[in-house]
Image (cartoon, rainbow, N blue to C red; front, side):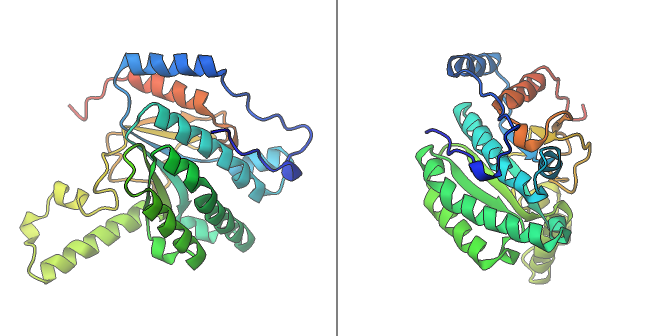
Length: 268
């Protein structure tokens, strides 16, 4: 499907969108990555730099998030075409509530719109949507749109698109510990039976493989409370010279190609 055009009313004359790959070249690059083998099963992305991008383009900071939606579309499509198992996007963190109220309201509005508008294409492309985090604390309109999107795509068998919404790594571990403590108090679980596997099976991501590759855009070099338990052996790619609204599949391919050259020893 063709990508919906970005809204022209917020596009300054001097802005030039990232040039897409030629379709024939795109097919060739994807085939080379597949032929190389060792594709990551699960990629996680910290989509950083929306606000910095907006400032550099003389826009209100909130507009950076809006342009970032086109990056999401392109990366989801590319991951689906590569037949990856899962893609997790750090969409809204528990710490993001501390941002200015107008920015949070705008983010929630665009999140609601994205969940509403993107589902037909996700469903058509066999993408199964998932969400992790304390989603019950999101605005009711977002929760309703999320439930509809999850229900619409629940039987799809392609890419698992995992949205981290109101997510914090420490909060996830706290929720897992509370659940295990409740089972111990009820006599359903012995403390001595709690091990790493038991904890992993209690996390939000229990039915997903741990990420093989983490990508973070825009220059920051930290995890920012994102999947700390799951990423103990994840390969990391920091893309320092690209803000998220400019991140496209060619950058994804570069990160995957670099990943394929690494030797993963898992501590051995």
